[in-house]
Image (cartoon, rainbow, N blue to C red):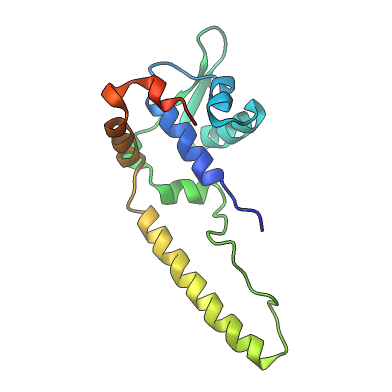
Length: 150
């Protein structure tokens, strides 16, 4: 199963915008993330619908934040992405006739649900503001060029 990296992508985009002194183009962000600007635009369109960012066209235009970083948690973003599965591990057979597999599935399913609940609980306590503060702390003198390496 391929890993879903959209949460990481969205956080990356939002933090770049939070630390930029001007609107950023999807091409700039695509270059920074080493991905196609179409992927960036598609992702940003969903964030715009959530009211977290806005875009301006024309010279000097681009994408910028339209939200309070303290008001958005990682859990909010995970939810906005459609709540993709947290863990790539799954069951071999969802509806087994074998009693052994039924017992194995029950234990694995319970453990995965508990692990996901713990991650979501942690996500509900982490705001974008906290990530932004940590990023600012790590960037020497708040210099943007140190943030442009993916």
